[in-house]
Image (cartoon, rainbow over all chains, first blue to last red):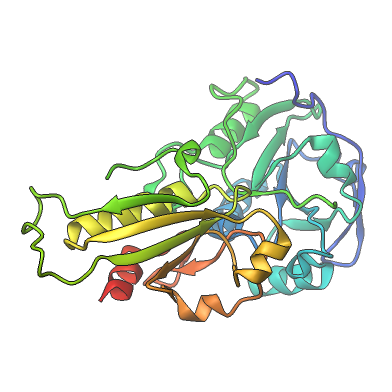
Length: 176
Length: 134
C-alpha cells in the first residue's frame, strides 16, 4: 500500500442528499465503513453505480455502510451540484448515503484522485482497502471483485488479500 | 494497429491506418480516398487509449483505410473553441460519431456514450463506430 495513503478515516460533517448532516461519528456502529469518492457526471461512476447499490444491499445486514462523496468543483461542473446530486440519488434510487463535500476538505484528507475511488475502513476505522470497486468498468467483464473481497475479509477479522489497487475513473475536479 | 499506451498519444499525432492485408482485400489506387478521423482527448479521462484501440480494430475489421489524427485538449478555452463535449470525441470527416452527444456543452470531462443495451460507457460502442463509418 502506498505510503501516501491515509491510515484512518478522517473526520467530516457533510450534508447528504437526504437534507441531513452526516458525520463520521454517525457511522460509529457499523462494522465496515466504505467511503467512495464519487460524482454525478462521470460515466465511470455511472457505470459502477448499480454495483455500488448491489454491494450495499448484499452487505447491509452485516454492518457495512457505503457512503458516496461528491467533492467536484460545481462552478466548472454544474452537473455535480447538490441539486443534481439529489436528483440523481432519487432517479437511481441510491440505497447508500450521498454526501456533498462542498469545500473539498474530505477529498483532500483522503487524497482522492479518481471517481469512483474506494476507501474501506474496519471497525476501528483503520484503512484496510483502497482503490477500485472491481477490475473492470464493464460489469460483464469483471473477474476480480476487490471491494466485496475486502469486505468479506474485514468482516471475518482478517486483512484482505488485496489491500490496494489503482482506481480507474474520472479525475476529481479540484477548484482552480 | 495494436492498442496504444496513453504516453503514445500526443497532440497532432497522425497515424496512417490501412487495412491489414491479411484481413481484407488489398487497397487499389482507384479506391476512394482514406477517411480522415480526428480523435480529441483530455488527460483527465483515462478512456482515450481504449477508444483508440477499439477504433483501430473497427477500421481493420471493416477494411477501412483511414488517417487518424490525435488532438489533446488541455484548457476550457480549447474545449469551447473545438466544441469538445468530453473525452474522447471522435469525428469522421468532420462529423461526430455521436451527433446527439456532440450537442452537450463543451467541457473538460469524460464523455458519456450509450451502448446498444442502454448502459452508460466512457467509450463509444463498436456498433456506433461502424455506423459512423458507413
